[in-house]
Image (cartoon, rainbow, N blue to C red; front, side, top):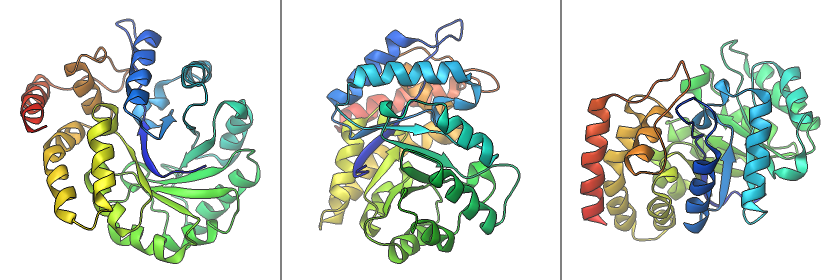
Length: 293
């Protein structure tokens, strides 16, 4: 699978009864596809996957697959801190309905690097679909080192990594160590434009849910020889990016999507909607952002 360009980490809309709002989900997917995103990422943390039941996850995949109708690739998030459970989950899905799997580092139990290597290697060996590693130390409590990524890149069924470590030095090291066919994508909206300059092929984005056209343009500009273009484009998005992560993800992006009228602002516990103060500042920034466009 080609990971170039903009992948959007899809949110899950809920209604007032906290049931999945499929009507809003269809409208949102249509909006994203009309904005020419390159692929969709389902069932990551942005989708509130920890609060989704297994049958709901399969229902979302089936629904999105039907709407997308193979026009763009689908990446499915399947991860956890039990290797055998992850493999079991992977084997429970119909692999004809997605193109690759995004699998996060095991969280909470803090494995060593050899444990991380064996975890992902076992997953890749036992998966029919290609694996994208997902390193996000701020959520998992452990960092998948550049050396371990290099070793894992030798597995032909591991095709890339979503690197969400804000330390871009590690991203640059991974790009330097690994074969050019191993795809490195940014998992951090705030530094994605810089990651592109260092050789990342694209970004799996949260802000892309709301401003896919603008963020995709930023990524395209970031490989341009005139870096002032990307800096100016980033300056227009920066405050909004900061705002949507201020009270956590997906709290902020859902507050923004609600403010844009895309869908209702409901989250499942333990997550709660953004504060009134955050909503007020997001609405203010929307007006400023619109004036700048």
